[in-house]
Image 1 (tube, rainbow, N blue to C red):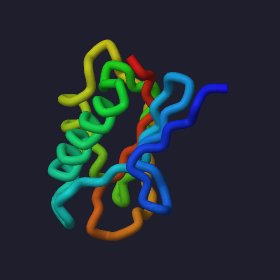
Image 2: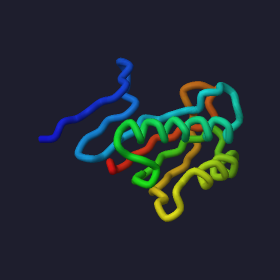
Image 3: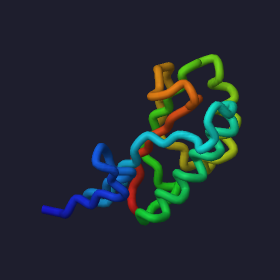
Image 4: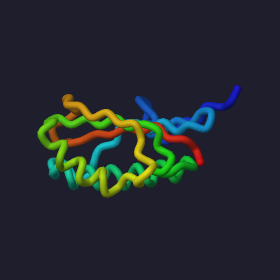
Length: 117
Protein backbone atom coordinates (compact mmCIF):
# COMPACT_ATOMS: atom_id res chain seq x y z
CA UNK A 1 0.00 0.00 0.00
CA UNK A 2 1.41 3.39 -0.94
CA UNK A 3 1.89 6.14 1.58
CA UNK A 4 -0.53 9.06 1.98
CA UNK A 5 1.40 12.33 2.28
CA UNK A 6 -0.39 15.30 3.80
CA UNK A 7 1.14 18.76 3.35
CA UNK A 8 0.70 21.95 5.36
CA UNK A 9 -2.04 20.70 7.67
CA UNK A 10 -3.52 23.15 10.12
CA UNK A 11 -5.47 20.83 12.40
CA UNK A 12 -8.59 21.05 10.26
CA UNK A 13 -7.41 20.29 6.72
CA UNK A 14 -4.28 19.84 4.63
CA UNK A 15 -3.34 22.22 1.84
CA UNK A 16 -2.54 19.19 -0.34
CA UNK A 17 -2.63 15.41 -0.08
CA UNK A 18 -0.63 13.11 -2.36
CA UNK A 19 -1.50 9.45 -2.90
CA UNK A 20 -0.69 7.05 -5.74
CA UNK A 21 0.70 9.79 -7.99
CA UNK A 22 -2.29 12.09 -7.56
CA UNK A 23 -2.22 15.50 -5.86
CA UNK A 24 -5.43 16.69 -4.22
CA UNK A 25 -5.38 20.44 -3.49
CA UNK A 26 -7.82 21.95 -0.98
CA UNK A 27 -9.95 24.92 -1.86
CA UNK A 28 -7.74 27.98 -2.28
CA UNK A 29 -8.87 31.60 -2.12
CA UNK A 30 -7.17 34.87 -3.03
CA UNK A 31 -4.94 36.81 -0.65
CA UNK A 32 -6.60 40.22 -0.93
CA UNK A 33 -9.88 40.37 1.03
CA UNK A 34 -12.80 41.96 -0.80
CA UNK A 35 -10.81 42.35 -4.05
CA UNK A 36 -12.66 41.63 -7.29
CA UNK A 37 -12.92 38.15 -8.82
CA UNK A 38 -10.10 38.76 -11.32
CA UNK A 39 -7.64 39.86 -8.63
CA UNK A 40 -8.48 37.00 -6.30
CA UNK A 41 -8.41 34.46 -9.16
CA UNK A 42 -4.93 35.61 -10.25
CA UNK A 43 -3.70 35.36 -6.66
CA UNK A 44 -5.13 31.93 -6.00
CA UNK A 45 -3.90 30.53 -9.33
CA UNK A 46 -0.39 31.72 -8.46
CA UNK A 47 -0.78 29.87 -5.17
CA UNK A 48 -1.96 26.80 -7.10
CA UNK A 49 1.18 26.97 -9.26
CA UNK A 50 3.29 26.93 -6.09
CA UNK A 51 1.38 24.08 -4.45
CA UNK A 52 1.48 21.97 -7.59
CA UNK A 53 5.23 22.54 -8.02
CA UNK A 54 5.91 21.68 -4.36
CA UNK A 55 4.10 18.39 -4.93
CA UNK A 56 5.74 17.37 -8.20
CA UNK A 57 3.03 18.56 -10.58
CA UNK A 58 2.06 21.56 -12.67
CA UNK A 59 -0.94 23.00 -14.48
CA UNK A 60 -0.36 20.75 -17.52
CA UNK A 61 -1.14 17.80 -15.24
CA UNK A 62 -4.40 19.05 -13.71
CA UNK A 63 -7.11 16.44 -14.07
CA UNK A 64 -10.10 18.23 -12.54
CA UNK A 65 -11.04 21.59 -11.04
CA UNK A 66 -13.97 22.71 -8.93
CA UNK A 67 -14.69 26.44 -8.93
CA UNK A 68 -17.10 28.07 -6.48
CA UNK A 69 -18.35 31.62 -6.99
CA UNK A 70 -20.68 33.32 -4.50
CA UNK A 71 -22.09 35.26 -7.47
CA UNK A 72 -22.27 33.19 -10.66
CA UNK A 73 -22.71 36.37 -12.71
CA UNK A 74 -18.94 36.92 -12.23
CA UNK A 75 -18.06 33.74 -14.14
CA UNK A 76 -17.00 35.80 -17.18
CA UNK A 77 -14.41 37.65 -15.09
CA UNK A 78 -13.16 34.36 -13.68
CA UNK A 79 -12.98 32.81 -17.15
CA UNK A 80 -10.79 35.65 -18.44
CA UNK A 81 -8.19 34.84 -15.79
CA UNK A 82 -8.64 31.06 -16.04
CA UNK A 83 -8.34 31.03 -19.85
CA UNK A 84 -5.08 33.01 -19.68
CA UNK A 85 -3.70 30.63 -17.02
CA UNK A 86 -4.74 27.18 -18.22
CA UNK A 87 -2.42 25.47 -20.71
CA UNK A 88 -4.08 25.10 -24.10
CA UNK A 89 -4.44 21.46 -25.00
CA UNK A 90 -4.21 20.49 -21.30
CA UNK A 91 -7.54 21.82 -20.07
CA UNK A 92 -8.85 19.81 -17.10
CA UNK A 93 -12.40 18.70 -16.41
CA UNK A 94 -14.02 21.62 -14.61
CA UNK A 95 -17.22 22.45 -12.82
CA UNK A 96 -18.11 26.01 -11.88
CA UNK A 97 -21.04 26.69 -9.60
CA UNK A 98 -22.54 29.27 -7.30
CA UNK A 99 -22.23 28.71 -3.58
CA UNK A 100 -21.54 30.52 -0.35
CA UNK A 101 -17.93 30.66 0.73
CA UNK A 102 -16.69 30.72 4.31
CA UNK A 103 -16.55 34.54 4.33
CA UNK A 104 -18.01 37.31 2.15
CA UNK A 105 -14.48 38.69 1.68
CA UNK A 106 -13.80 35.89 -0.84
CA UNK A 107 -15.07 36.09 -4.43
CA UNK A 108 -13.82 32.72 -5.73
CA UNK A 109 -12.48 29.42 -4.42
CA UNK A 110 -10.89 26.66 -6.47
CA UNK A 111 -9.76 23.13 -5.60
CA UNK A 112 -7.81 20.87 -7.95
CA UNK A 113 -6.84 17.26 -8.56
CA UNK A 114 -3.63 16.76 -10.55
CA UNK A 115 -1.30 13.96 -11.56
CA UNK A 116 2.31 13.98 -10.39
CA UNK A 117 4.67 14.47 -13.34
